[in-house]
Figure 1 (cartoon, one colour):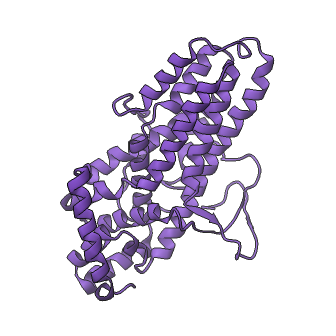
Figure 2 (figure 1 turned 90 degrees about the vertical axis):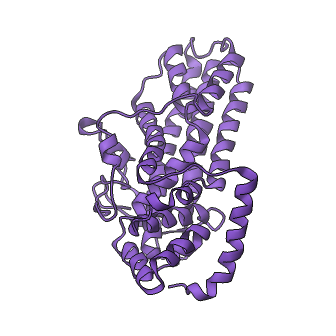
Length: 350
């Protein structure tokens, strides 16, 4: 467990930095427990669209336009905050981590630990149980990334096959207007995320309320498929999965720190009393920048497109693959691990 005494000076400097940032950029949006649920809705809405894109037809121009709208209508800030909030609730399902946070609060004082994780989020994963929470977060990010990229593959393959269809091989009319429509959908207020009635109840979880070994449970490898229910449930891949042990990508580890910090606040029942801190924590700038770049690449790709099938390629590459890469980039295969772990289709969390 990291010593608060050693850490205090660094935290004080960081606290001054936070205060200065607030005076120049304005207050971050508040986010208590209920607001955290609202944030998660944006991330769930993206995965809901990924589910629809996986099985949706692409046989005419109208269906292509609908698919473009589905990838373009997600705001970068809301998507970032939703993903961090989702990870935070998942980290709060780790018994070892929740116990470690509460032990630290008992030893150093609840207020001291709350102050520590809100001023320097990296402190959170250094608490006892942090490695288990980190493993859960890396596994979930890798699964979500693979799921999105799996659908990206479909649309990029479709782009090549569509070249043989007359409607898709035609010049895309009013392409500039199309690009502006997609841009507008992604702006604040451009689209209000909504979810099927069966999805929202599955997003409401409290610390230690789920079994993280269940691949269909919240945060599990098959959660976003299973949440649609019944015949909608599908595996991420048809073949047995080959997964690696994962380690944190140092350039993107701040996202995991922020997830763990918000999870610590949940474990200490401090969400409502520290709403502004939660709002700052879920607004991870590196993740936001990555998603923004993916969207800018989508607009640029579409701006350069001439034929309809080229829009399908842009959709797959930038509306899906680049977003999936942003999510998965928090981890990387641990080359020091002995060998890949081969799992069957019905096992636990990979």
